[in-house]
Image (cartoon, one colour):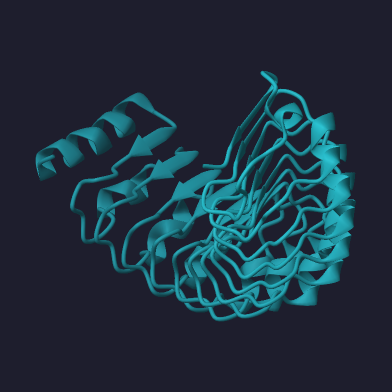
Length: 297
């Protein structure tokens, strides 16, 4: 889209008092200065461009509730962002950020903070002060451990940690009692903690492409779990408690080392299991009834 089209959108937003402005996929190298005059904006989407820095005047847009700057080339979070105290969503996925400023905790209304695909080697302490966070995507960074201070984020519903360098998930993960979606795939995990069973609201658990050798018996406590993704691990057998997953729709176990299934699987109805690439030669007929789709050849 041409630069004149960008100008047209900004002018239209100014003349109409529009609260939303979207300038994604415009090949922009900077946020146009004219945007600074749109102080009525509550939503600004400028993703998938080539922007290298957030301008100091961004603080003038103090009505912003949603700011998406994903897929750019931003390296630094400027102090001027501090003035956006009404922010509910901040999306900085796909940039080059390696640290946060000390004041970053001063976003009392922030509910969604997207910081995946950056250069983080650790999660800064001040993130734990964002106590209203519901979603924290941290995938595709360089994290080797989860700091204990994250326990303070008691309202988290979505935690994404895929494609890092995690070797363990700490036992305190069980404190996230509101969690609905947990993605720890593409790490270096050998075990999931027993406390995973305390996440009783969890609907989606993704732990594929790790080095898991077994599942904890407590997995059966996840009575609201609908999707369990465990492809590309080294799991040899499933716990009997797997049959207690009364809400489960889908279990993906491709390319593990499973040779048999526990009889408790027979308690699961209307389920699809993908067991391709395991060591199962044959399943008893009772496993293959119409209310279960089990693929293993």
